[in-house]
Length: 128
Length: 291
Ligand SMILES: Nc1ncnc2c1ncn2[C@@H]1O[C@H](COP(=O)(O)OP(=O)(O)O)[C@@H](O)[C@H]1O
Ligand SMILES: [Mg+2]
Image (tube, rainbow over all chains, first blue to last red):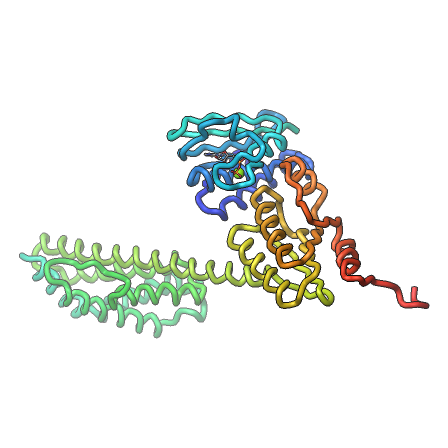
């Protein structure tokens, strides 16, 4: 199976996203280290859904012939300043503020689109 | 004809056909589900159940004034369905089969209503409506009962898992070992920190080894929980040695830009134990003459 939609409502849903993304990365042929990176990125994105957006959806899928994509969609408050959110140590919730910049380094591509108050969509991809 | 008259007459009809209903219901249940649970469901028991249920139906109908009242789980009838579902669950009877139980009862009663055909077709339709209204409520309750029982089981299990998963090991005088195993969520992190601080106080822990071999991934959330625990341990005067970070874990922490200040990190638990003992002025040595 190469598409999986997971609803993130509770904290325990985050670990399900971690398990599933790690397993999918393994099936797609990623190395143990890369699979660990992808799972950690999934954990960060899912945790952000839970903490900052009041829940949302994360989709794990194969991307093209040689990649994997993590996509989150939520209808939370949104990210007013995306550059700021990507800054090391910036957090509006007393977190470490290392999640989004970390995802950027763990994955190969990161796209963030946010319409505050309407919809936030984040895509993170990694190639084999 | 008023709803009340209909209810009274339906109730009387049920009373009248009680034996026939029980008989038909027992046979259906045995045919449909009995063979799946040899020795678990007996005809005698089914008979008793049916008898009690129908008595509860009569009592329920007697309590209805202007139409069907809602069956709550506290009412005698609701409680009966609830108990049945949780009893079935503990005896390994599947929820589908419990549902079949109720569906079969609905069928048996409908069938007997047809046999004892009431005065008018109109009244017959009303009877069926009343019956279905009641049985649907009971089916919903039994579903709820099943979910509640399950939730209780899950809550108990996660409680036991939690107790199981935060051991504190006194390795040597003033040296503690706390292995972290599994997903570290907010509740587990809090519990871990509490246990660790309590142990440091009780055993005058000078060195605390936190072994993270069993932590599935190190994300910023886990790192933050561990940092807080480490800070608290240091406030109580204990050094912290962290062991068991995997190579992938270490690389990930670097990518996340996280480093644990004031923490001595060792690859293996063995190296961590050696370091901890050194910090309290001890070391492990081979006995002279042994190899
Ligand atoms: N899905 C989201 N919805 C709204 N805001 C978000 C979302 N994801 C991230 N953010 C914002 O970006 C900031 C930085 O996120 P992150 O780097 O993960 O740090 P942290 O989660 O520790 O605050 C957050 O503090 C929050 O303001
Ligand atoms: Mg975050």
